[in-house]
Length: 140
Image (cartoon, rainbow, N blue to C red; front, side, top):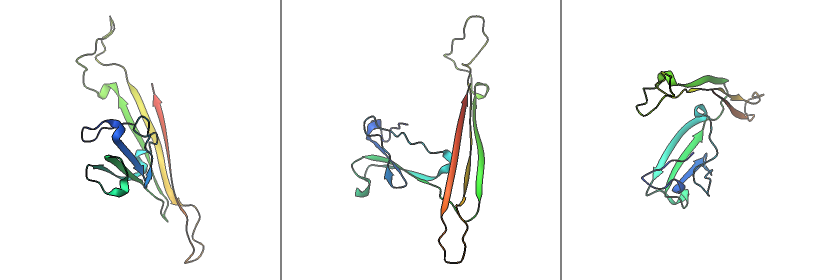
């Protein structure tokens, strides 16, 4: 994934996930793309940043959700279909066809689940927490 911030080239954008650099240094961008529901927050930093961010002039800093003592989760589907799109003025349909857009059917679906890995046995005992996410894509 590549983005341009403040009009700079995409290779100058740094990526950070939970404080660790995930920048792909040769071409810019990142190969790590967490599930949308797994992201707790993100911040786009540009220009006068603190020294802690290193040598990159712009940065996308994201953090993931963490588990809790309660079991929680969500199901999701992102739907993209050509019937929801406006007519493409520049699309030239094949001869004999009445299509106004190129056919597109895309479904992205998945789930998130968070909670304790093991139950707290007694008060004062440490509890390990986890967050799991899964994503599938169906393109027709």
